[in-house]
Length: 163
Image (cartoon, rainbow, N blue to C red):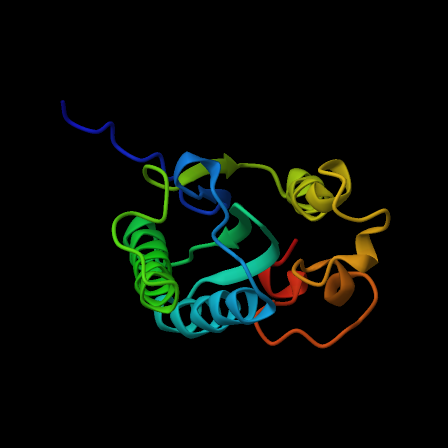
């Protein structure tokens, strides 16, 4: 059975979710989280996309991105990041097979007003999941940079997207 086409609309934002296979952890150590962020930074520059918010959870990731160059840019970014990270993970933990469950999901955010809500939703995941009591206590999201001004090389300024 053929896959359905991915939805992409020009001049919008995308909330992307990639989940570990069988909802298993894709991050086991601090080094894993840092490694994923390094790959995300490297490939977002190559694909010329803008990252406005993110949250890395133990078994999945949430990203809020803008792709000025279109669908091909989104596909290239997610393919490179997820494939590179899976290869690194499998070598490190002496595993084989898939790390990610199915394809990543993308949800189109059409209005500028909603992008801030989407970013807040993404950043609130660790509190909702009971991993931390306060947003600023989760080191693997954009919250501390976006709201508290902490340095985060991977995050783009929301102003660049002209919101």
